Length: 154
Image (cartoon, rainbow, N blue to C red):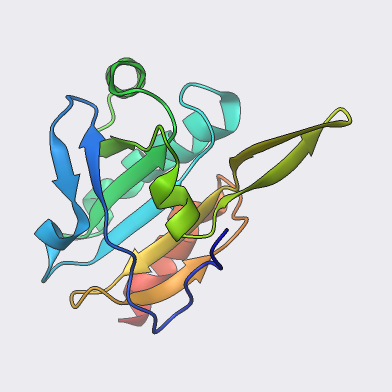
């Protein structure tokens, strides 16, 4: 597993299917800030809180793009997006290649059972494709707060 990129590092490139099945490249947003956030599973309590709170601040972030990435299939992402009226793009990383590139695919443990999964994390990518802020192991409620604070800093 790769280490998570830090501030100043080039953001790992990706080309993932969105909730409609259309391929989306990070490089398509050059010239804009992009929040790339990784979450474990669509339509679970923490992931729903995180997505809905990001949607709630979407009018306060200018032309910053929000991209949510999970191992869910596009059809599940579409259902999640529609159910909660999310206006941003959700991306499917079913083989977790992008999660590995960002260092967020790791061994987890629940009720004594070990398994591989997403460590909820977020990265703010600047207009030139570099990581300006990295928030590993972020809580769902802190994601929108940290984004607003980072954008206010410039």
